[in-house]
Image 1 (tube, rainbow, N blue to C red):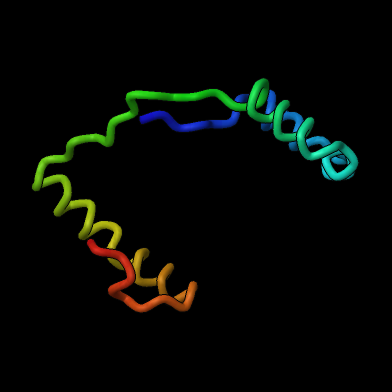
Image 2 (cartoon, rainbow, N blue to C red; image 1 turned 135 degrees about the vertical axis):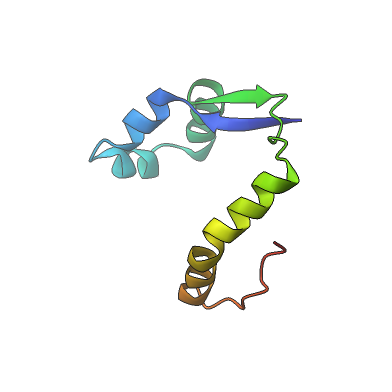
Length: 83
């Protein structure tokens, strides 16, 4: 499984003040082609970390209040995520 991630060049170019105007004026094919060819890279073999049950429990405890606050802020029910 591979995932496309932006390169540093993509982040720098997107930060330029006039970039939105330039992107709107470029033909869609050229815009997508340059993004896919030069401004992103494929990362494969990325695995999620394996956490022990002890660490998972600790993380749940530490993040519980912030998680509930974020869900309330976004208008989602408390059981929106399976934790």
